[in-house]
Length: 274
Ligand code: FPP
Image (tube, rainbow, N blue to C red; front, side, top):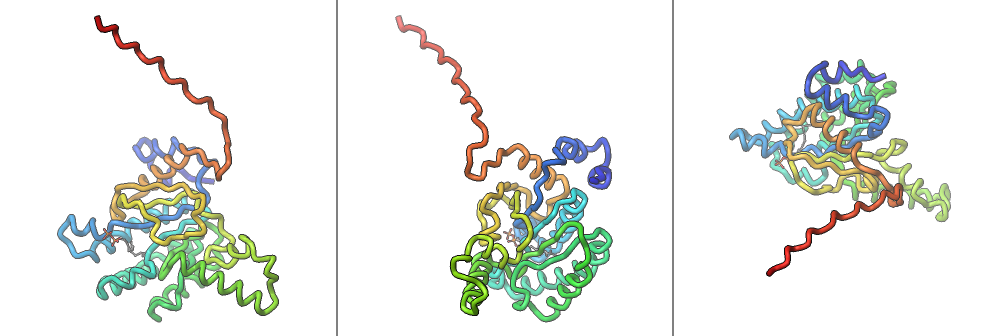
């Protein structure tokens, strides 16, 4: 049962937004491309890493609000395989922030019954980061509330290539018949196996790109792009995204309603030129 008071205090603009939502039609899975940390820092004449540091509060607010809305899953894009190309100090800071986040938030994740999972190639990360992640996976393995996926060292194309390789190995070993290679066979070999596909994909900072994120899973996701930079993103922005999502008609390629096409108002006849 969603406790509205834990998300937004009564008589506040956030509460009005929350009250406007249809809580029976919330997205089951929300995926987020957290973008704009560098721009947030530049606007304040700060080093880029300060934008990432400030972005932690947004991660906390989004995870907290998602769990209180009782979403089934929330997937945050924290580090792509392409992000290794960033300056070494920036990569090291991102990894240090991740470890710090886990150290500080793990008890709260467990308390809120949040199941922490990693989407991406964990084995490519620094051993100290792997240790922190393994500890978080172990500590929340029994949790049955929201699944909090963190996409780390992630690439949608690499995920699909790994699924293809696993299928090829199963076929070669005789565990899978070629005629059984179907969408379900691919889906069950993705990091997100067993979870619903994201209903809503949010990207912050205004860029209109998918950035190699959850390529298979977002086939029918509603995309919401906000100009808000990630370090400024809070509960209200998640609620705004969900409000917009609820205004959309999801058709999955079908024709759902035959709404009558609005008649154009009669054009005014130009006055006769005399
Ligand atoms: C994009 O901003 C953001 C990232 C590449 C990393 C996001 C990471 C965090 C918010 C912190 C660590 C995460 C967790 C879960 C603890 P950008 O640097 O590309 O911004 P720009 O486009 O303005 O340069």
